[in-house]
Image (cartoon, rainbow, N blue to C red):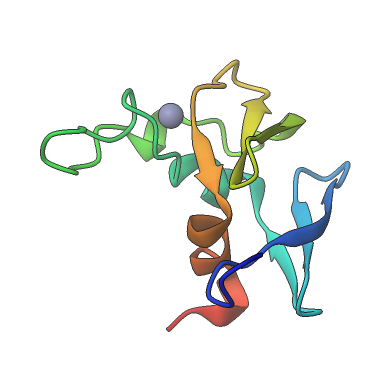
Amino acid sequence: MTAPETPRPTRITPFPNGELGVVWEDGHQSIYEGYALRCACPCAACVDEMTGMKILDDEQVPKDVKPLEIHPVGRYGISIVWSDKHDTGIYTFIRLRKLCPCCDR
Ligand SMILES: [Zn+2]
């Protein structure tokens, strides 16, 4: 049983050019630029857990950063191993859907 407001991907595809494609249960398709997704990493090394302030300096992220591996995290999200060796961020499906570039609200 899934609440309707919890989006779930049916397919996640890392493209060779560094983009990440996600097909959602409701048929929506998202294409994420690798760099933008990496800069949105929510882990404790990138975002201060207490204040919610971003610590990560986008300038330090390689512009051509790519997702190398995608791992499921429970039933609610994914973790991404990046080509810059960063792998601690967990992208929940809710957050990932909010990050969708074409759904920018
Ligand atoms: Zn991070």
